[in-house]
Structures are given as structure tokens and as C-alpha cells.
Length: 75
Figure (spheres, rainbow, N blue to C red):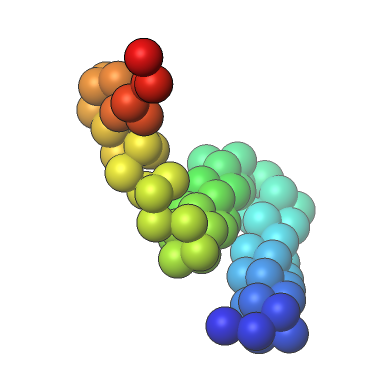
């Protein structure tokens, strides 16, 4: 993915989600707005994981309460 493609995808995610969040807030639907924020965070995390797959392993382990694997240390 090029920088331009990444920028376009980030803009698309942000524009869509912010629009939904704004609409929900104006309508007084707090739970929907919070769900939209969570959805945006999830989408951004998926995009970030596509660029740094090692972060996925660490994140999934930390979500399970397991310590992240440490790199071996030189003696």
C-alpha cells in the first residue's frame, strides 16, 4: 500500500466514522456514539496490524492477560 493509498483509507475511515458519531451525538444516542468510536478504533487497529504484524501477536497476548514474549538477551 502506498502512502497515498494509506492516506485515502485513513481519511475514508475517519470521515465515515466521525459522521456517524456526530449524528449519534446530535440525536442524543450516547451508546451508539460510543459504539461508533469503538468501531473506528477497531478499524484503525486492523489497518495498523496490516503494517506491523508483530504488534498483533503482542496485542492478542496482552488482551488474554498473557505477558508478551520478550526478545532473548545476550549473556
